[in-house]
Image (cartoon, rainbow, N blue to C red):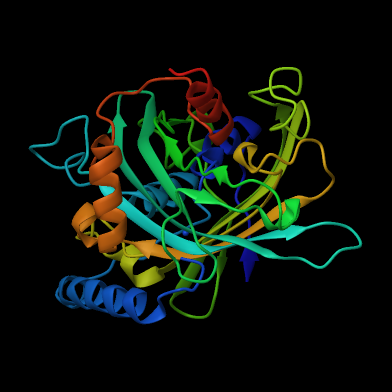
Length: 337
């Protein structure tokens, strides 16, 4: 039942991405369920009128082509009027952030509401996912978007800290994609990588990525001793995308409905002023693809983004590097850039 396709390390480094962000602490289940059901019911109409083509997810090309429709939309990339740029897509997630310190009770520190805006672009040798990401930290009880907060880990009498939300622009990914004419006969001569997946029953598939990170921190303790836990960043990012297999087999669908789960174990956020204290943050979020795009997001999220950084209403249109992270953005804020 559980299968894993071949991959390479660079591929996963690309997937890290959507990482350095992810949505209120108390999940608005009814809102998510109603929106998801209405979106999927619309797609069912298309599905019922279209004969399905059986998909082989062990085939790397079919696997990755399916993932493209899950991660964003491929509308505009294929067909007689195709271009090198696809329609943009959106994901929304929300959840809770907890402290985890050896020998101490864990505390719910904040909630989170986040979204991404993405689009695919292509050339003869690659597929590239262009993304902007927002994650807004929220009050753990009310779900209101925070501007300042009392860090409960610093004690009752500590000063309030300014909350620096996640504004990651860009978070871009590069995927090699070279398909030769003899792919069916000799796929090893082409370059494309599939994702690990599990088939869950007859019509459910979960694509997943378990990513363990260790790399030099974007900011150092020498620069910001009050804000940086270590000069070496270490963390864990666990992503899951749940879809219907029948949607993947429907050749008329260019934007496949999906629900997601995201878990992170990471270091203290720089704005928390935790210095090099021992411990970690544990993030647990869940969400879904918003087929209506930015307009389908919760009203408080839309209002906040339009007031603060309206560029995040849309995905980028050109590929660029380096990617932004919470740590590199913190440095820009502190340096007034």
